[in-house]
Length: 354
Image 1: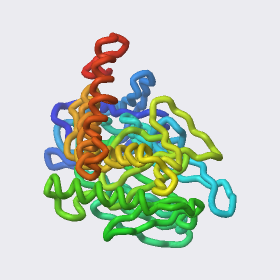
Image 2: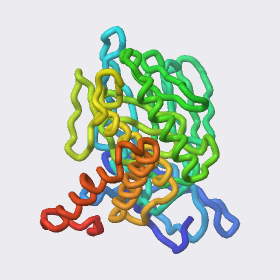
Image 3: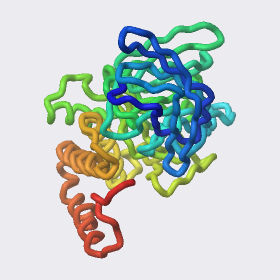
């Protein structure tokens, strides 16, 4: 929607090669069709400027952009290596936003305060599964490719999530209705404890905030080698886990080991159950709060994380009152935060992000 006459449009774009830009629109009862005459990149700001030969007058236009991107490990689509059950090295593809990662997937206005519906179409070989944060999802098969069409609710760009993996290598566990935990076929281990914890967290959150059954996510993924991007997605959760075969390191994120999301009541100490519960609580509650509220700017992203952490602990404290989780939170988190504030080694949480 053009509100004021202009000859250029600026979008966020990083590591994308734009080859063609076409705009079409209707204003003052006549049709306009044109191309961008110049495409320039401001790399340090991750901005692309589309310059048009004629003035775009106020009105509604459709902007069609043809471009190519790369699958890397710094945002957008990333590929994660894993070993399947017969010992082969395979690849899984997932969006890893890291807040501003979506500008590496498509040109957009990549700001947290802007929301819209997204229509996402994914073409993959028919032996791949595709999941996304969707309220409408359709699939059409035409060998050897399957087309998946995803329509989201109104969300900001950084909440888009897509997971693509070989359906032969990952299987789902469905202990309760409308819930699935996807994990590698290779991992034939005891899952009953983590499933019981996830079920308890979901039911407690639904009861505490008087949600209807099914309002919370029902797909959760345990993915070997994935680094946690720290961003809550709508409709599904990713558990980052350490893969003993291929180590992906990133000091900006917390990486869980695969055994950290598995609890064996017979051999593991209660401390592991408590830590595991905190991680699950944080993820589930973060999905509830994170998708309901979006900060107006990146400087305020800490607030969602803080709320999710606090209420995740609160939820676990209700499930396991004997753990005194809230008391532990005061000692490990609140007092440590006050100490860091006093030590003057950290920037304030509300510091400006450019």
